[in-house]
Amino acid sequence: MSIDVETARRVAKLARIQVDESDLPALADELSNILGFMEELNEVDVTGVEPMTSVTPMRLKRRTDVVTDGNIQDLVLKNAPDAREGFFAVPKVVE
Image 1 (spheres, rainbow, N blue to C red):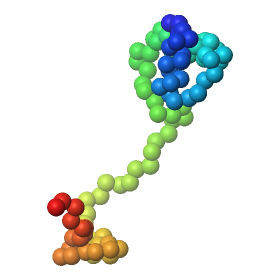
Image 2 (tube, rainbow, N blue to C red; image 1 turned 120 degrees about the vertical axis):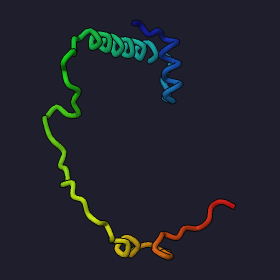
Image 3 (cartoon, one colour; image 1 turned 30 degrees about the vertical axis):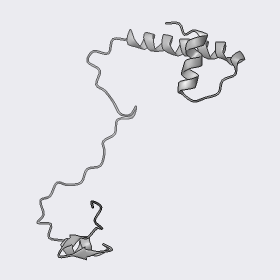
Image 4 (spheres, helix red, strand yellow; image 1 turned 45 degrees about the vertical axis):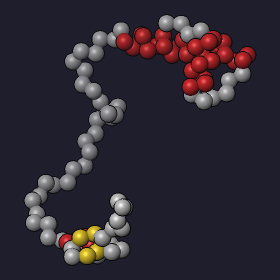
């Protein structure tokens, strides 16, 4: 796919970047190269390849899933600026 100068001008406007008129042909070439590379990537067969979040295999730390009774209402409300009857008190926002 080829990007022309007018499309490069529109992309620059949408991206809200100022590009000199003399630099538009170079920008159009760069955008065309990027799209060409993306087309090459689409040709790669990735069937059976698992998606990954990182190039290094790592596992996130997980906390143990322990059932507790909670019952820490006093600790939760301890730093609240305004707590009433066991709940957070907030100003009324609907009139």
